[in-house]
Length: 81
Image (cartoon, rainbow, N blue to C red):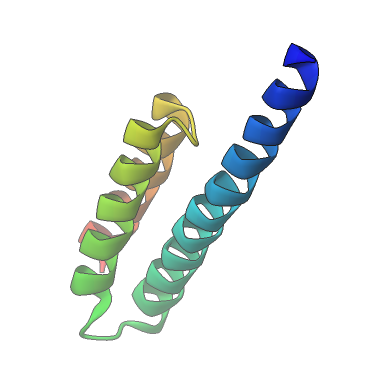
């Protein structure tokens, strides 16, 4: 019986984590695309992506080193342009 309860709660968490992970990936890709295109709103997009990455780490959806690596690559690319 406890295994069934655990499975149900894991499924709920999996769905919530999927939303967070998806929005994080979307923001990261959008920021990368704007940096490469040289758009003016790239800096704002990087800020939004960093905020989402930090939120995903605090929720335990992604590992903190993974988020740090992604934030670093965004910052490096944004500062080059």
